[in-house]
Amino acid sequence: MIAHSTDTGLRLWLRTVIFGTDTPAGRGFDIVLLVLIVASVINLMLVSVAAIEAQSGALLQALEWLFTLAFSLEYAARIYAARRRWAYIFSFYGLVDLVSILPLYIGLLLPEAQYLVAVRTLRMMRIFRVLKLVRYANDAGVMTRALRHAQRKMQIFLGMLALMVTILGALMYVVEGPAHGFTSIPRSIYWAIVTITTVGYGDISPSTPLGQAIAGVAILGGYAILAVTGGIITAELTNEISAQRRKTLCPHCERSGHEIDADYCKFCGGDLSHEPEDDAPVDEEQASARDKLD
Image (tube, rainbow, N blue to C red; front, side, top):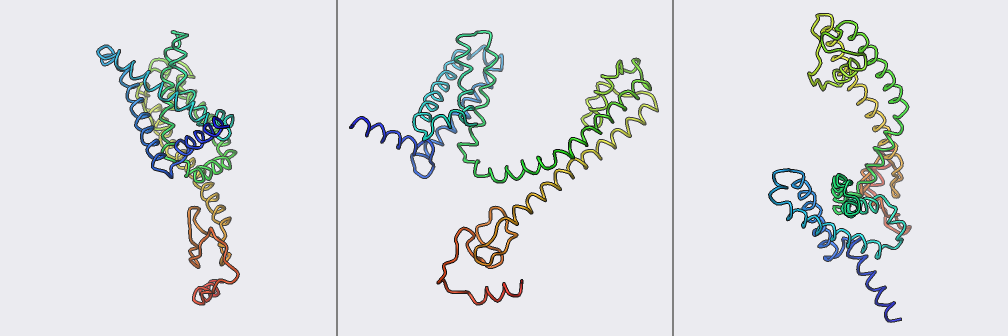
């Protein structure tokens, strides 16, 4: 019974430190973890530089093992302290934690898998959790729903775009031909895509007056495409934000139209997170202002 009580106490303490930020120990843990993540990614970048790796390869490899062992212990501690262990293991961040430490261990068993070490850069994604940027998940949800609503329009638009670049590619293949670098229709379609997206690598360019005129039309069409794409997404995003504002009702004056992250009503100044008490005194000035607005 004593061992069980000690184990429970240890789990509670680890849960508070690892998953919480309200205590000095939790904030200190997050700061140390943030430093380790950034240092490990910098170390991985240095390993990829041949000159630095040749000079300090042994030290960098030792540091990499040190970082991996530290993250492995942290991963095991998270599993031990989590309330629902399997839910954490198969969660997004749980999988990121696992994938960021596996490549080095796999490289010991399969030397040919050494290029998987680049996967360790996924550790950078853990910064979002350390900085608690998940508090912006609501805003991310608004963006995701807006993109989902714009999906059908974007599919139609991308279909028309694919038809456009195919026609342009075939046309430039006929006009310019292999003599000017347009050796095939697929390569000409590649030129059309690069031109319409206004990237312009310059590896293929038209030389005839007619070809240059077609290229000018394609470039202007590219700017129009950017405007249409942005307009579709912006319209859906505006609709989604408006819908979110309509959902937020003030419990005091029952009016909507508040910002998603608002704490107080912009009409009566009431707290949006608390219901009014039945015996609470009524602010006559606020009531009069509401009557005028209504």
